[in-house]
Image (cartoon, rainbow, N blue to C red; front, side):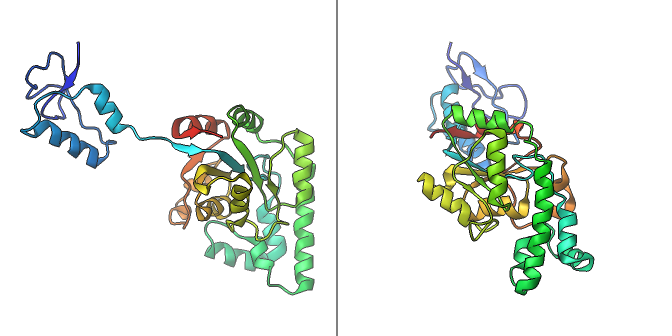
Length: 283
């Protein structure tokens, strides 16, 4: 028996004015999640004097559904995203900048400090010392390198869907090579900070899109940094997903940042469902 909806939408569970010749009336109930333009359109159809026959429920379903965006590639950050955080960035920044300068810049940059940007205009001697300090912290991180839980499974899932996988890191290429060798998972292209300009500039992501011959709007950038990964993705025109394991970005200090992610997860395992729910995965 065909179903139809009430002619007068109601917040109650009763049909106030059933449509004529409707053998199986189903009450239409407003939903706070329904777009306003859609609820108005349905109400207009129900109440219009020109409307003579009920709308099949299948038709209503097709009206309310929207096509999923096509996704053809996912680009990952490395440190803190594909790998367990192993670098004490706060200690690194303090060692490079000094305590007072670190606190001043931190207060002015709620989304985080871009250490490479901070030192790029320093004198050659001072800059060299800064890079040596950064490299020392990075070497210590390599000694403790571990793959992030869920990373291998997520990459396997993307491979099963033939979705491209890329990598952008502000670490050096030596670290990328070690990751590939140690864990047997390769990303292509895989861009390190030797590619200039590096994140948060969108250039690396746009370069990967060009190599893949896909549009930025068909790619997602996944990372654990608002200032580097989300900004890079947003400025390139890609979808963005912030990995926030500890909930640090729920703090009020991040409420008014310039670049906010399209999605936020607390583990890489959540991305599988996120992709299935929101995207049409097509190579």
